[in-house]
Every structure is written in structure tokens, then in C-alpha cells.
Image (cartoon, rainbow, N blue to C red; front, side, top):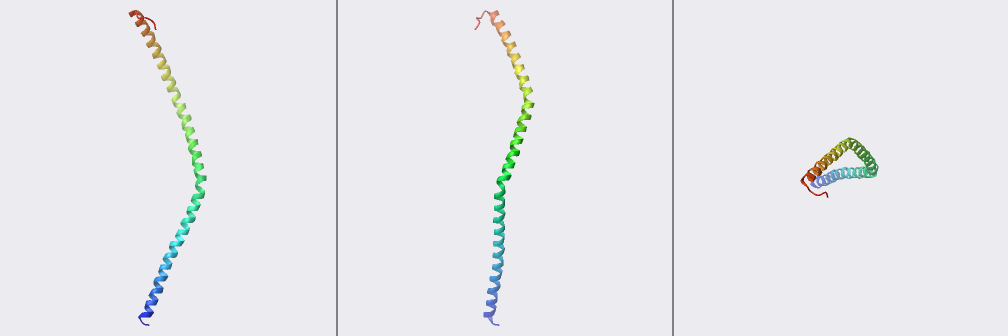
Length: 103
């Protein structure tokens, strides 16, 4: 059992350790690639489902916001209409009193 024997044993031992490390990396890579294939194959279905939920939420939000804002818009419109009517009514009278011509 000379130095040459121990050199051969250490070479085999180091090769065995490198093989185990490489095998672990290869197996991990295979599982990662298979997992990515599963994710890529299932993604379109879930994205369509998420898009449907998003569309449903958007229509619900639009309907609720229209139901809430419609009375406010109508009240503002009626107020503005009354304000304009009163403004025109008094402006005409004031302009007629001052002697301006009707336009």
C-alpha cells in the first residue's frame, strides 16, 4: 500500500463525490424543467379565468358607479339649468333696462 495506491483511491473517491454532486444537479434541473412545462401548460387556462373575473369585476364596478353617480349628475344638471335660466332671465331684464338691443 504505497503512495500510488492512495493516489488511486483518492482519485476514485473524488470522482465519486463529483459524480454525486453532478447527479444531484442533473436531477434538480430535470424537475425544474418538468415543473416549468407544467406551469407553462396551465398558465393560459388560469389567465383566461383571471381575465373573466377581471371583466366581471369591471362591469360590476361600472354598474355600481353609474348607479351612484347618476343622481348626482342629474341634480347638478338641474341645478345648472335653473342657474342658467335665472341668470338669463335677470341679464335680459338688466340689458333691456339699460337700453341694449336684443341679440
